[in-house]
Length: 137
Image 1 (cartoon, rainbow, N blue to C red):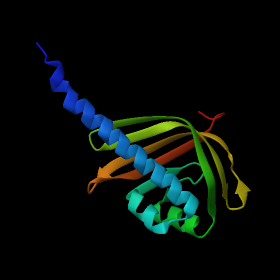
Image 2: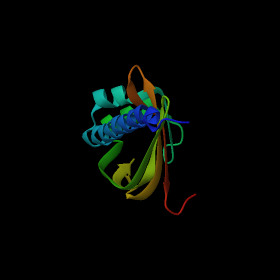
Image 3: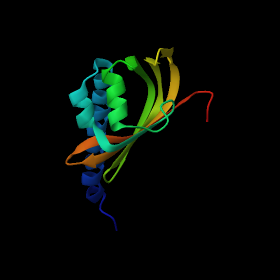
Image 4: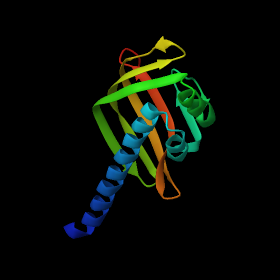
């Protein structure tokens, strides 16, 4: 017979991990909008990769583009987001409206996104980001 109380600590741990992941994700959005190099360096894993529309940009290139104004993010407004944690891996996926520009191109619109995080040195760091417009799959 399974004691229902035995599963409670795991459930509480997962909820706590998901809350921490959501906070890291909010810090990510704030750091982008504020061009905060130190926060981006802290939040992004060294092995960070970005897909669409910056095919293959790594951490150094992406941070440089944000800080130098090549990428400007005025706002990220979430419509839906699902958070999942499994061990040291966290996923946040959903849709959002992004008001942003890349190399003088206005890329504002509604996007589906997937952000992959990993727990490194006790904190959540983003490892990969994939974006697609609602028409893409």
